[in-house]
Image (cartoon, rainbow, N blue to C red; front, top):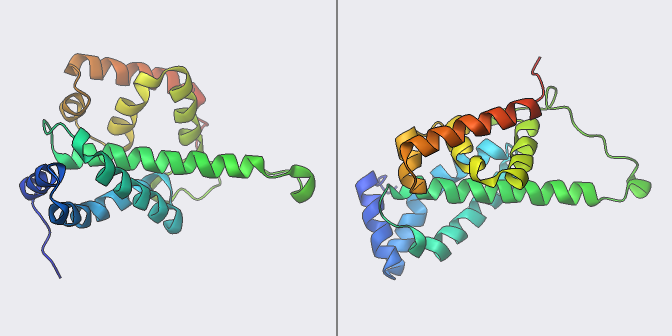
Length: 187
């Protein structure tokens, strides 16, 4: 069994992979896969769905590694890529469920997030609120998810997004105000 890479080793592998080193890319993807899967499971608690989203995230990482600017930790950038892949998978599954013919299968019952399994903290109302926020106020979604769902530090988010710390704090605050009324009360 291979030993886990340190954050510095992951960053170094990412730099080499971005320069075209295929072996470094394979090492990097193997090192970050467990973390990417955990991010995906935070959105998609059903393991096969999370694994599909994780695979999509790893493909995106491999294809977009050149867009990592190297200012922050690679794992921070990877976290956002995995989160976006999981949210994309959620949207795809939701749209497929909505597209089902109600005449053929009977009306679809919308699950109540208060009674739906919330493994790994997933709440359907939160995902739907983020979808609405993304449509209406897209600049608030990413900072809000990174802070409130994944617990990243404000300064880490500011570095990742390349915006001032005060702007990040304001975006998160405003995003919370817009999201709060969209969330259903938990019993």
